[in-house]
Length: 404
Image (tube, one colour):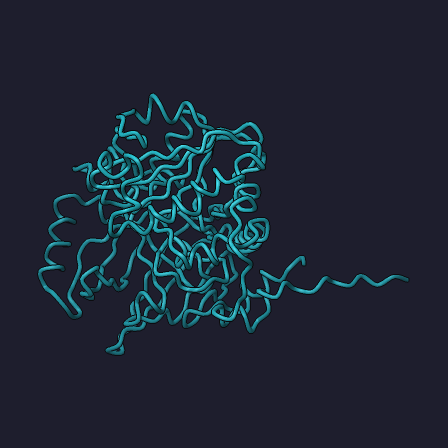
């Protein structure tokens, strides 16, 4: 009689690391490994890099931005991706191209890109005419997320790609250094643990002792995942770093807290899936008034379009693209959700600049004034705790360990 012995858990899935992700060790960033894993097959693909500036023509010509102050994201794109491709990675993966282009910064998350784009000689080109039809892989390393518009363009023109907005050194050395086969497998294990949920309840504890509860109706839908792999030839856009399970809410009600960019804290009231008002906790009343005026002028800006849960064991990077992927965090998003399979389209907003998809991340470093006391999932007669005090529950840790 033979015994089946389960293989040991990867070190990063041991409980002491799951509960203290800052202790995880990472391999060195390897561009060949990242692109080869995420985009297999790469043989025969023509690749390019998109970056953004307020004044693209002056900064992209002859790589002038490299000599200018600032632009850390764009400089990382040049050093670690453009130079990496040109220094042998492109040839080793059987790819061609490697050109870098610059478009005008959108100044909003997931806003549509203008068609104008410039090459490194300063020549004006068209994204629709010169870039999208002529490249198989497009890497967008920008200030703001372009996942939604590029997903739509990928389906139209048939390319694959990735959005890596906010790229910094922490992301390079952690979220982009991991094995994306493992990221995908972990995301799928947690997706199966959450899929077909009827609803989620999130309790937020405030510093003044109040507890706010937000209820999100999910209607038993299949959970979706952002897992980083963009394999085969099917048009698609990966969001890197990846590692997330998400839903498009059918309904929502209750309250949740909000920390605005200027540090102002507010309570948001939700009815029928929409934020209807904000009330000041502390900070600048004018910030609250401006938000309420925006909600009144264009109510679509308050529609909840996503509920997401991080699935990766990662350190805080200071950029939401990675920090929302951290296990134990969750995020809500307002605005367009067509790139997630939702029904909120850019055309439904009163103004183009309002048609963003804005994540509201709840994490200890991001919202220290609020604690996620508990997240509960209801699925049929089953109720499971998912998160307590920004830590994954036993249910999630067991799901990650399953089948190994």
